[in-house]
Length: 305
Image 1 (cartoon, rainbow, N blue to C red):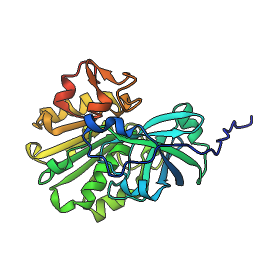
Image 2 (cartoon, one colour; image 1 turned 90 degrees about the vertical axis):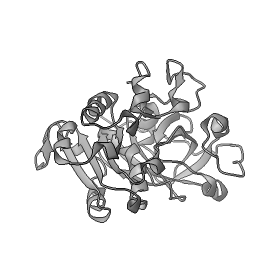
Image 3 (tube, rainbow, N blue to C red; image 1 turned 30 degrees about the vertical axis):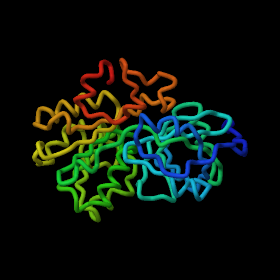
């Protein structure tokens, strides 16, 4: 049976000129100014697993490239001409103004088409959109980063931030779980996180595969491996929504205040601007007021998770 491949048309995308200054991240005032696209070239593609790839993008116009800014936790809209656009979390360092990295899972029409393109192809991005993790407020405290499956992708941006400001934080622990070892992402960076940046990395899988010598179980089992003062610690939790309740409830029992736990509701993102209303939870637009929320706020948003 022959593999069906998409032919991606090489076409120019007409866009407005970018603003003369970078946005101030005041979502309410700036959200309408992000309704423009920046043409990008795909400079590198790394296959991480059978379902995920890491795409490295470079904004083509040097002025737009120098002005583009984002904060850890924000996302952008990635457009593939002729196919549509999808919201994707930014997985790179916000201090790197030359490239953006997006970890993409093949799951729908647009992402399936993206998996057929090669280096040099042109796409467009809009954004950045949404709220961010309060990295400055976390300074001086311990940080606990908890990810399940693809949730490690949005965690990379705050992890890069911590790496680049390591002296401003106390103990840093990363708890990362997946269903099977072959689904663990960014394994090539594990040694760097542990050895160079003094970050304690703990991994676990639900089901072992041949050659796996690590832990097997649920991600909450990894709390047995750490000993930190929860009242002096901040947590960022990313992963499937069902994981939020389990992990954050566990943190609550261990004594961490709910307003120090942050989750990303990025899976609810659609247009990024509150126009389509598909991200609404009650009267809250999660793409404008989020996707990052503290857990206390999430608990007061009915059916948010």
